[in-house]
Image (cartoon, rainbow, N blue to C red; front, top):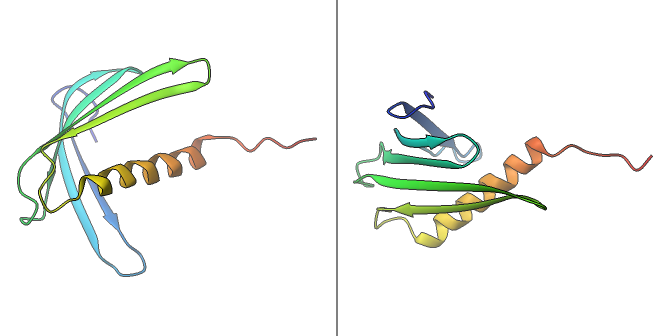
Length: 105
């Protein structure tokens, strides 16, 4: 991962139960630390052609951070609802990694 404008990244996800995996990568188009991120996604699977563009806006609020995500150019084989669920799952896992456990005592 080279998180700078023009830099690139590569990711791979694997289901440890089935062994199935998928990978993709792309280029960072725009970055503004703690506020904005725009990047491309291109799947390695030839059945998922084209290039997606993902844009993420972050805004600090009194209750934490508001996040808005858009994805353009989603391959036809991927239901839009699955993208939504994928983001929800990823953000839930991120919360578990970053939120401290605060004991009552």
